[in-house]
Structures are given as structure tokens and as C-alpha cells.
Length: 83
Image 1 (cartoon, rainbow, N blue to C red):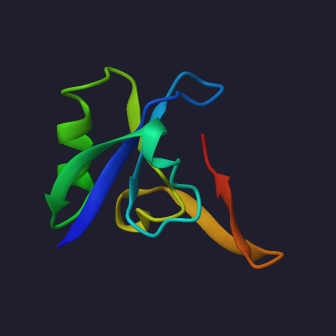
Image 2 (cartoon, rainbow, N blue to C red):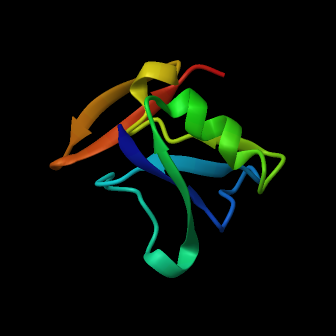
């Protein structure tokens, strides 16, 4: 089980992202809400909906529930999504 969080600040599309502990894109403590311990990001995403209507998983750390391709750029993951 992993720790999951949701960002308080929405991204430019108005989406609050769910991330797991240790993610490179996890916001600072004051800018995130602890969701709990879950077996997968889909469970964490459902919990995040208790806080925000427009939520989605962070594609950098929640790959099992994402339709995005991950690739490494300058020692940091970048994301290419199909929308």
C-alpha cells in the first residue's frame, strides 16, 4: 500500500492531481491533502473526489491508471498524454 495525496492547487486545466508519496511532482505539504493508504491509484482517485470534482491521477507516479507515456528528460520524468 502507498500513501496518496491530492494537490490543493489545480493545474492549468483546472484539474487537481493525485500523487503517491515520493513522486517528483508532489506538492509541498501545505499544498496537498493526505488521502490515505491505498492499494492503487484508482482507489485514491475515488477518495480525492470527496474533496474536488475535477480530479485525475498524476501520470508520473500513477501509471497503472494512466493512458500516458512516460519518458525521462534530464533525470526527471516527462509525460506525453493522448487526449
